[in-house]
Image 1 (tube, one colour):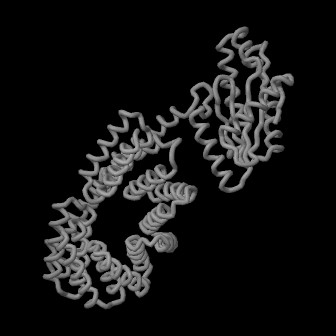
Image 2 (cartoon, one colour):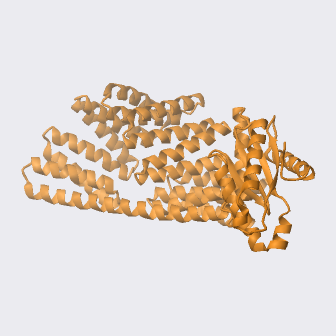
Image 3 (cartoon, one colour):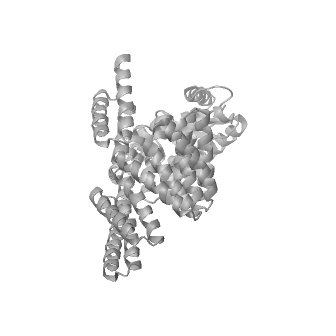
Amino acid sequence: MTATEAHSRQERFAQARALARTDPAEALALADALHVEAGRSGDRVWRARAQIVMGICHWQRSDFVTALRTLLEALGLLEDHEHDDRALALQHLATVHTYLGEHDRATELLVEALRLRERTGDARGRADVLNNLGIVFWRHGDLEEALEAYERARALRAELGDAHGVAAVANNRAKALIDLGRHEEALVELEASCRAWERLEEWFGLAMALTNAGSALEGLGRDAHAEAYYRAALAMKESIDAGIGICETEQLLGRLLARRGRLEEAEDLLERAVDRAERLGGRRELADALRDLSWVHERAGDAVRALEAFQRFHAVERARFDETSDLRLRGLQVAYQLEQARRESSTDALTGLPNRRYLDQRLRDEVQRAQAEAAPLAVALLDLDDFKRINDELSHAVGDSVLSRLGSLLRHRTRAEDLAARYGGEEFVVILTGAERDGALVAGQDLCDAVREHPWAEVHADLAVTVSVGVAAREGGETAEQLLAEADRRLYEAKHAGKDRVRG
């Protein structure tokens, strides 16, 4: 790909990402074209990037199952590629799980994304992840944790001079403070947010902040001021055609007016919210408006209309529950199917150990982590001694049994934090996390002894099996390839020293 082609692809990718929230259909068309183009050239990273945008578009359109599949496939393509792209995919996958009510899974994904962002030193990316974490904590009711995550996100965005991001975080913090009953603090946040949105001429952001300010004022018992803020927010949302966002403010204002005894005005607003939510397909907004409308009819003494609104509310809530349950089930099925496919692509069928493809990526990750943390790391390269003789004299079936048993032995004789993998043929690699050279030599000798002492006669009466082991420990800035090359040199020494031994 030429520099001009790369620049063009990057520009189209940025355009698609920018459009994903405002015009998902157009963004999806752009991302699909990028995906086809990357597929023709065999570029896995660009296919994954296109799929990330496609995933964003799907969840924006509430097609969460397709979003889940698309984003999981993107992660599969990025298994051995750039960290920033993986972090972006993880963030949006977390958003899907948040919408499905799976907050614990969303949190796990965001923590992994944050780790990747920290590894690459991407401050803007870290701020985005922290803000997303705050949203997940808030939705889950972990309000203090939400405030902490938001504060860290705000500090990073302030350092970056990101006025838009700082205003958005202030608005999010205010919602958590309102839920905690800390309304005065929320108003301070919202005043700063409103000023920033006005300077930026971001009218939707300003309308959201005004709506939240109304909620804070209502919590303080300042109903007249709350009404003024709700009305200002409603007028602004209507002027910019904020769609489903209008329903929220209509419902909040309608409930406030009903509480103040202005039932006819409240009924009118809530009926408008119901009509708009039905037309635009906003089930949550529809349920909220119907619930409050039922309450208002009851206060007005109209039991028939109150029951009718409540029955509609109950039907919508039931449908929402059924839909969410179905989405979760289908999402689990998709995740299971893709995980099975991923495992099959990264697992050696004969031994059940990770294969060379997975080993290469894991070793690169461990080397990067050891470099960042100044932590020790070692590898052991094992080779079955005289394996050709076993195949030739005792049969290939016996040889396969030896490989299978060795895979099981390595799996059970290594620590949980280590990784044993099939390197190829009769060679195996063990990544020894946190091991210095001396400790790695001890571990290598333990494996060597375990192989020799294994009851191989259970496989064939004439069978005896040993391995030679080469050990290499990270001492400076060695790459994964250099560590393996050093282990291979040490293995060669072990073979020529008589086999069934360890060198390092």
